[in-house]
Length: 167
Image (cartoon, rainbow, N blue to C red; front, side, top):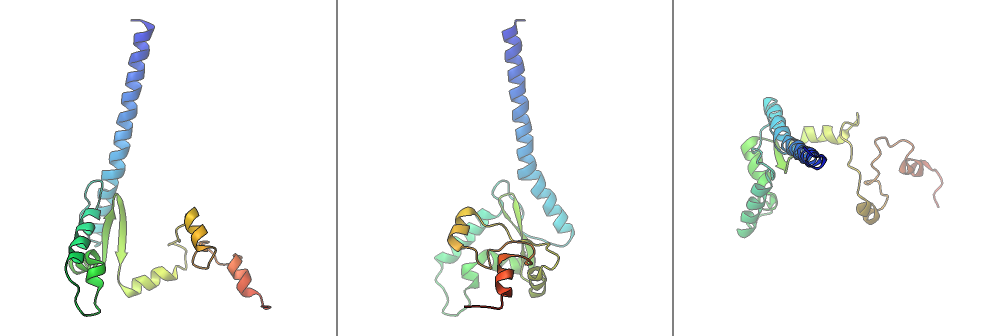
């Protein structure tokens, strides 16, 4: 065998190994992790629509919204089933707390008022605010709602609200 043949074989095998590892990593992210998470949460009593490969529940959500918007609205002020038909349907089907999928990412929907209150209190910083993107920060500014620090102490707003002298 010549040096060129050895080089071609080694490059081809390296490329095949790279593609195989990428395929395994992709299947792990898009299939195994969501299925494992669904099994873990269903063992804790949290049900929801089943995970579908790659798109999750988004097709079902889109179809439910499309169907709800095609029907005429009632004259009552109860528009929840028109605005969020998937939440209305799945709360009836799976209970107040359920799991839905946006692609391979799970979203836990909580509609129980006591649990929402506990989550919003966030005393132990278990539920942090997501950092705002660069464009969102430019659009929304540095308001209290955007101040995503885990502790309010020594933040800009804490110092501003602590001042005694206002003009």
